[in-house]
Length: 532
Image (cartoon, rainbow, N blue to C red):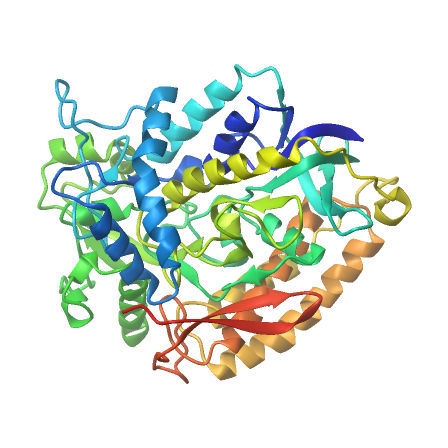
């Protein structure tokens, strides 16, 4: 039993930010499935949305967020988040994050523009913002002796005591294949999203919905899993695995074109390429299906090579690796699964419906994003809720560690892990999700998916119960759970709203509601007034 005050599962911006603050008050165990840098944060290109310019206001940032969320955002929490943003940005700068300035002699930030924003308010570090933030947070964490890092440790399941209080987690040490029990007074899920549930995704391989699946199996409320954001512009190239072309490229003037060279976004939105992501992704998908083509083009050849190299050094270099010179060549792109607006249901402090368990970042459903995330609000949400959860958790440190009944919680991993990897099931789940739970849905598609997902999930759960634990089996079990949650949530929503579009319900209801799933009870709806 490895004991600490805090157990943080995940090493993205939310988990690292929380760990840094918690280390001031107690001992922290931070586990990550691979290495610290293996997270969606490290791949984030665009930046962090924050009001810093005098011409911008908190009200405008909140209004843009609410508009993107299509009636499902928590108004109060959105307003609080945008007002807290400057203080959280200040903390990152004090830690050493260097956001790009207008020039070498300026104190003003070079602010980017992205879809859905009415003003330039995206702070960025070139086009590798997440990677810059991640490296700085990791370098600061290394200074704390009371933060113990456990790389190559994959969380399996949460541990609940006899009173249903979360007391830790069972974790697989990938290097020696031993299952270890981590016990803590405060457990924080910061595991990121679940993009690997889909065949095409911008996410890293570690994004298998581990936090969402673990919380669901433990009995926590899971909300709004039908709202999966598809980023419109992932590089279409068989060798360029999961490489994203940042929305900031469109913010700087890039346009979408068909293979004929024709622009098409004006048919779908007056904002054209800067429309919210759900609109742009559906527009691309519609055009591709109508023409039976595999990709469209993103064209920023109107900008000079000097500008592109300076503003997008990483994207420019990566495209060049595949023979694409952004200054003279159009970039082939396709939508891909990107961000989950749903997740573990939390309150304004990051608390889940299980005592002592917090969820922050993309693992959670905070009410900030509603039915569609506004670009560059994700990194902001991560640092805001890390701070909120940390402050709320201080009241739990005086408690004793819960007593755990090991006989009920023990996982047997005495033999070597099975070498059998259900590659067929892994591939089938991801194809099912892409084909039936993707950008366009229908009742027929959902029913077909239900039959097959139920069969696959039962097979996978039985295999997991009978065979020794491995990272492959943990991830397979989790994406099967997530696919079921997406399916059930999608079947509950009898309308089209934001990221969820069902051709059999092409209208939007006057009342907005959240879909809540819980393993211990039937689905329920929490109704909210539609946004004005």
